[in-house]
Image (cartoon, rainbow, N blue to C red; front, side, top):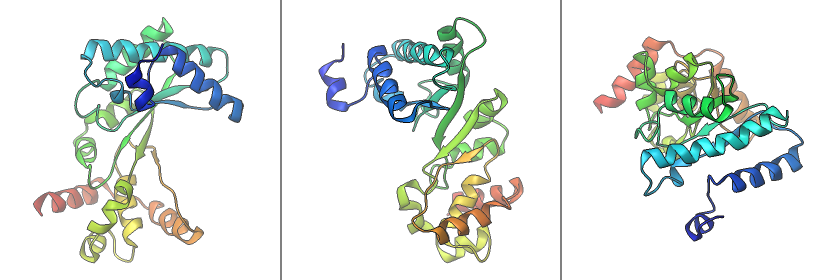
Length: 225
């Protein structure tokens, strides 16, 4: 049973809601390779960590059922802030997945979080060999970086001098995406393009990622400003 608050926010981790939403998606897709539990922190407003973890485990239990039936390939968590605000950690999410599966053979396979030059904490941590991205990668998860342009806001901060500093000759969008895509431990950068030319521009830039040393110089330059 959903609460009025959950219905108003259109977000819930209740098993019945997770099952219903997954069934709706599968009715359209047939099968899904990966299903994300999206922004579980929205459900966690006002909840203590233990209760939030219990809710996440309940959602994972439903998705384990779909995975065992062969209807989804796996599941994961897409979060905006909770891996940096410590509502949960990567090891805790994996422990919840093992509990949901009832064994070490769980189907939690992906983790999505924002990675950009605006939210660059994850980049800095990864360059130092730590943080959620490195933990997820070491655990064998597929890592996804969302909002690499921060909803387009980053483009306003991409001055010609900064673009040239990242790599001469790139567009502002390509330079920003190159920085995000060069983050250690990141497998996939989630982005879109309005034209084929924009897509080709970014794809060409990402064929030669920045080295860790080059990326660190970029983050250090931004920190100094």
